[in-house]
Image 1: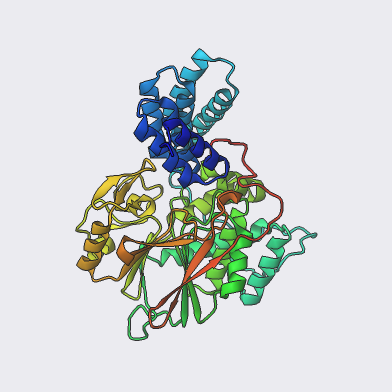
Image 2 (image 1 turned 90 degrees about the horizontal axis):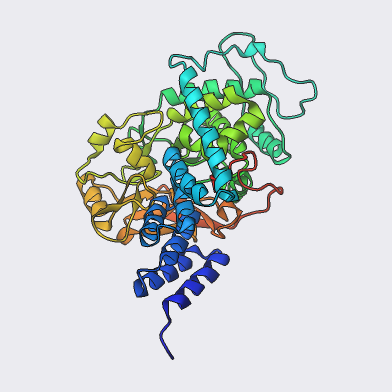
Length: 484
């Protein structure tokens, strides 16, 4: 039997891509490149797959290599433009698109993307020009808001004072879930009140939260079971499915949601509103780490801003953004596990005391420890590597081991990346990736998973499949095409 040629591997890659077996596609294109490293098509094809799985930094490198091999290869310019647009490098993306349109003025995809990018660039410039830095988004008298007579959802009784006080319980949470399942939209008065009160709670939480199930610990939270949840990305019906399977937040069942509550999925408002209301009912039983998608820049591209404006208006979106800026970035559980959305730091000798003293809440972290907590990824190789995303870094098993030994910890729990089984134990058992959005974006075919921790500190992994949801595509409220 003869060995496969580069063309054979390319065809296998194409078949895998068509079947959405993205890693197989990358592996086959890589084998084609190893046999024939001078064919630009192999690099451009691999870049296309890398865009599908959000490895935008790698996609830019591959597209650039394809252009170096063939400066007239327009598809490579388009791949690079798409990858740059998703890293929010809007002007750099337009430069590639203009090259395409100079040579092929009727290219529909390039014209459409360029139009969207130019519109977004103008919008961002306008918002920056009118921005009022000292605006107090939370200074709202909700007594001025009326509730429509036709509203049939769960009710909140308010007092008549300026200070917001309302009494809700688990029954309200269950009514809210049922209301959202039927497509309900809450009165703006309720959402304003929710955001004002949740921000008051977040004001009392530090960027680095420390909690423990040990009654002897000063950070004791008195629960019998604690669940860690990865990315949920607006997949409301999957969220309530695993609540029904694994148990709801209660006085004796705590939860930590490890970021990326919003964007991509078209029920992002429902997800974050539900989580915020649960935190009002159980402020010391549910914790919310910030993810890289709880940032303004990402929300403008990946759906939450447009969805929120459609359902609740621009001002409520801006207040949501302010609450995102106030979320913790990292949590330590039982003095054993450090939990963050992204991963570890570019400096190998960071201590817990460094984290306590240096990590702060910031609007849109673009550098430093805060950015790394939101963006970094593990890699199989030792040492540090360049991020395949184009932001942050990658860190190897030796980095994880040294960090844990320095800080007397058992392990790292992080999210931020799809895992086909919903979770993966990595770095010689010292790092766990947990991802909780099954069949991510209705296309990936992955399981979702969560981690249950008992009072002895033992970990149990629970997997679940995607459930049916109303016929609405991801990012249904945005006209943008470069979020995918």
